[in-house]
Image (cartoon, rainbow, N blue to C red):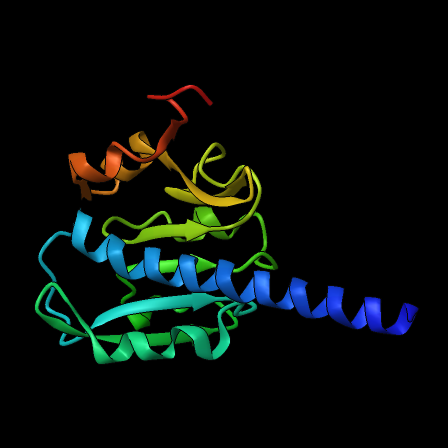
Length: 166
């Protein structure tokens, strides 16, 4: 009986994690609709995942879509490689704290699920509030990077950092 309860609870946790990462993957794609990037000479819109990839196959279908009129290309990296020309960079939870400074390049949207990511200088942080995936945005960092954000996206986020509460 205990083994069955453990099996059912671990299955439930796995299902919750799958839903959470499906939602986060959908957000990553939808950011391409609500963020304006500087002009680029890239032939693809590069969505990069740095460090441990929490999405796995859940995000692979994003490569069938387009962003900014370009086909989306997923780029998975263990270490940051500037030659990959990332437009959007998801920093996995295992990436080093100083990575953000290495990437402080204009035109790259940085997103992470690390705790306090946006408060401490990242651009968009995923947080869980009330069992739901929510967004924190560091508006000052985003603007400093040369990116522009849609007012529609600003309506559903918590602004942190210099121009917010955090």
